[in-house]
Length: 334
Ligand code: NAD
Image (tube, rainbow, N blue to C red; front, side, top):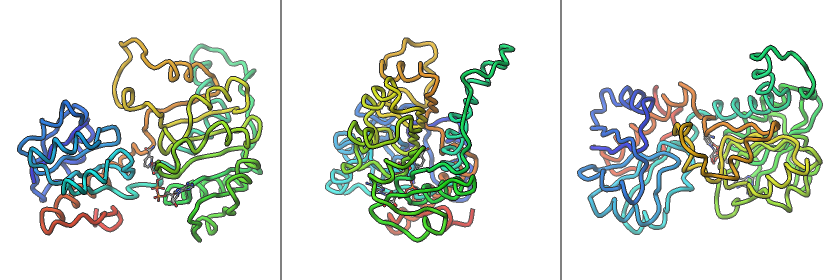
């Protein structure tokens, strides 16, 4: 297969090239994001390989189909950015990478909780300036606190295990409860109960029309005063404007984000020499109790190796017999 790899960074090039050893696909690495303007760069390719902020809306899919692309191989688990109905109509196959490393995301999430609670980001800056004062760095013991986990799939269950290890009481909500979360130490409760009883609320569900702005003004009002809210799933799960208002009043005491509603125009690029164009984002980063990372929760060597192996396996399976079955990394010898 000749494959146009969009949004290709040096690490994508490295891990995909390694995974392709022996598979023999022709990988064409392209730095631009996939968009209506860049879709034509896939001319002469059988497939495109896309990441989370590539545009896979109907107009882009139509352009890809028109120039002979037959497969969209996502190197992500989430597929909320793909118009699957349009892809089906156009006869475009879509594959993704399910559960490439739930540990990576769950561990990053725990990192956000620890850093926010103990103000490690602030302490780091202070100590560099020889400011050893502790005022403003007061945290709380995680042991004995209540953590609410919304979405108990692969990542949610790993996160439950970590927090149970700290001695937290873990509450969970998922429309499809599973035994694994209970075995990991959580107790399923209705969403309202979780919001009302949790000191820390964290999101691990996918972005769908049903979960868009799941955390809005009404849900924030159901949370404990001074709650810590963490989102490492998808930005649009929370209504950022409502969260910003709640930060100003102190209703939300800590905010940890690895994803942001409008991240497509920001994340994965070095914009440090440019004028900030997103007022909401600029305001968020002024709060000392807000910690934002740029969609890096997945970014471990293990995860990148798994993503690349699974993506190449999907290309090979499609080339062999048109299969689009999701190939989880743990099903591969890698
Ligand atoms: P998963 O499919 O294993 O689990 C998702 C869970 O959410 C399922 O149990 C599902 O029943 C549940 N769910 C669906 N609708 C819900 C709702 N309304 N309320 C509560 N739960 C609901 O997915 P996963 O591998 O655990 O990944 C979770 C999310 O993490 C992905 O959808 C993706 O958006 C995000 N993610 C982020 C990164 C990152 O780098 N930040 C990396 C990978 C995945």
